[in-house]
Length: 293
Length: 293
Image 1 (cartoon, helix red, strand yellow):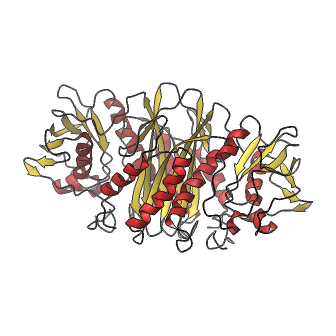
Image 2 (cartoon, one colour):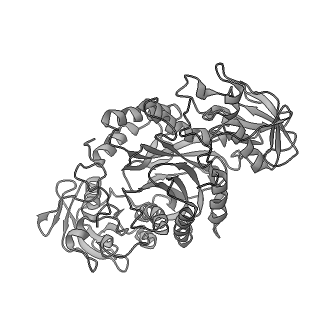
Image 3 (cartoon, each protein chain N blue to C red):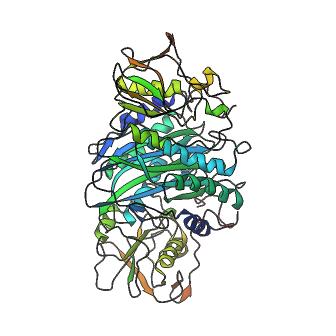
């Protein structure tokens, strides 16, 4: 790549302009982005790393898919807290193999998803690195006090997922984050989390935070995936949430079990203990990359 | 490292609690951090990468110095927009060599600086990588409309720096970001930028954004550094700012020149053109790492 940093920033900036940048006073090009919050809103912040040979492999993912995925991970966290996306920031470290064409395609994938969810790119940082590394920051907003946490599931609540699980084993390279589902959960769900690391691990996290156990009854599995894959595979971008027994879940959701009294974080499926085998970067038995299939 | 991600998050979380977390409703441990803005404030956001063998070398920097530096880079951007820090987020990718002791020392350096500037760690992400990679996000705040931009320097303004330049050639491993200087510039300076990539490059950026030229007269050089190093060395964490002729600069500042009419971005020192030789990750003639000295 021969462009200077200033040229690259200039080109990204030219492509970052979205129709509506609610509240964004200063975007790309200064020391900081400047955002003017609306009264009565809480702001939500999430950061997500996406690293070559850890979260993706460049021989199996196109540049546009990687750009999509970088932003989708952050948007999914905003969805899980019942937020509306407001803007994003991107730190991007490029290895020598990432030429101009690759970088432009990466931004095509990222900006397509950004437009879909009205999430302008407001700033970030650029660097070199040996592995391609993205860190996406997404800011979302929710009415004051209505962000949906993972630590408030109650005994007796029913457990739902927003769709079938096992995406990783599908030709489904650009899943949409469940922003619409998240919004519908405001004031109705008791707790939520997104399924980035696999149902078994993410449900365990929700139960640990809420100090409860879960009893699963049935898991909706995508065609082509196994129950094992649906239980432990990651990157489903579906939401896992709990609601009191009388509450109506959003259309397309599946009831998968209920919250019960018991050891914090314990999960059972039809009476059998489910180990938390989802993806953990720091477990010694982790696979080389998450994308083993 | 043998800890699971959950253990590591738990330990970081236990150490992240600061006395005062103004506005932070949810910190580490959920899908997002939740922040409640105060009325009448604009929020400032910056992200900064810090990558092994690009921004630092582990044989010449201690873990605590690297933790300090990761956060100092972000705080310096907040200072440059005249902001008060509110909270930070950290994405951290660890190679195999970074053992528990190294990681704990890294956080010692980061949290020491975070306490100094009341900037609680509100969340982030963890991963593996071959090079140690940090991406720090800092959120700051400033009274509505008072964030100090780099694009508003005017012809006739005087140019200042907040201290002597050439830190990189000093045994000065944990410089403090100039938050206090930034605050004092509110409503008084016309434009500001922090000197992260060297005076020649950063002054050029300010002049390009403001569509003006600069005429430098004298540069305050640190003892042990040369004029060349003060002009083109990076990581000074000093602020570069412009003020109208009558305005009084903060104590300790040096007047270095004035803003003049001319080609946008052109910089001269005593009549001679100054090339923008500061650090650019994407220039073909860049050194292997910034830390060549």
